Amino acid sequence: MKIICDNTITAKQEQLQILESLATKWNRQITIEQGAVPEDLSLLSEADLALIFLILPNNRKKIRQYLECARELRMPYTFLTDQMQMPQNVKKVLLPIGFLEEEVGKAQYAAAFGRFCGAEITIVQPNDYGSRAEKNIQKSIELFDKFELNYNIVKGKKDSFKIEQEAASMASNLQADILIMSSSRDYGLDDILFGPKEQHVIQKSHIPVMLVNPRKDLYSLCD
Image (cartoon, rainbow, N blue to C red; front, side):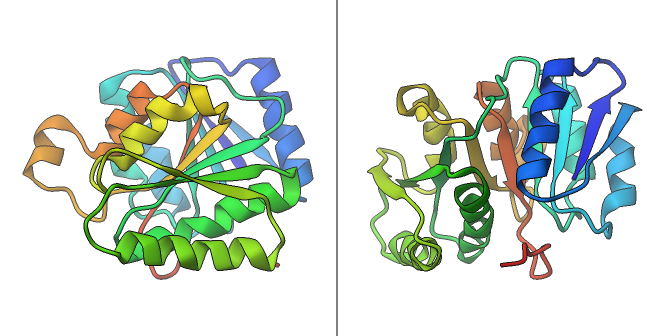
């Protein structure tokens, strides 16, 4: 694991201790890089890391810069802004699952929190007309059942295009500790002008947001 702290902010000692404890539970070594800039992420695209934590201010421009530099990462990366609370223990994972095929890929990371931290997984199901999201949820459940993990399903009001933002707004009521979502596969015109969906979720969220890039060669956790 690697902690990257932006050069405009100082990581709190409590944050570092919590992340070091998480690395121990995952049986991973951890390194800390202070004074970082977004471009540093481009050097990690092929690194053998299980997880990256990004500590930075809740600044729209800064978040956007890190998102753009993280698009080639094979491993998941978690945003921890100064408005977010990092829990002492990850007891509940929030997992919105939409209709895109790559949505299933993030289930393994939710499962890791269940296996190594004993966390409960709350799946947020979109209000879609089709059945593709339901099929993705079923595939994720098969993985959770394999490891005998605790999970439940909450039906959202939004469709797959907005379900992550709804999940972020539900986090407090559901007492969630971390939200896992897929990053945008491509940036459309609205994403370029107003920012991609993940940027809005990160700015809105009060819990850490883990992003998983839609790639076929994602870093996989060992059983």
